[in-house]
Image (cartoon, rainbow, N blue to C red):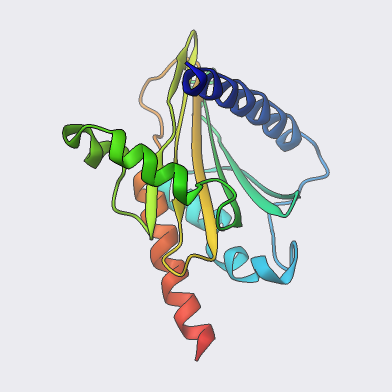
Length: 195
């Protein structure tokens, strides 16, 4: 019962956070570039999580980055075609120190208690460990995501997508695909910078 309550609170918090991020995107103070944004610990991520990366997955849209409580949040809001103006797709990639989003002990406990038949979908093979977030489906929209830890155990990633409005022939966002691409890019760049 306590686990269900915690998940409900997490889902509600995520919905509120997403709404705040969408409001921030509509602000004229945000730019489309994140060069030299945040502290030095995010320099590598600023080279990986770019507007071009999101465009290659989704298409055109608005891109921003925000530094919040020791985490960096990259947000992309898809620009729908004129034929589907009511459709909104926003994707957020939050990055923080390892343990920020995916607690190792909780992950291992969840893994052990999840039936074998459900593990592949719930715990994909991305980074050192990964776990899907509880999806939210409601009137007019949905939200789902993937939490993961980098192979070097330095960072956690929270890749989340929200969709709302009429869904026609519009962009989609695969959280597993983008998480995999982020981890591959990080592993490659991290190994180059260590040398």
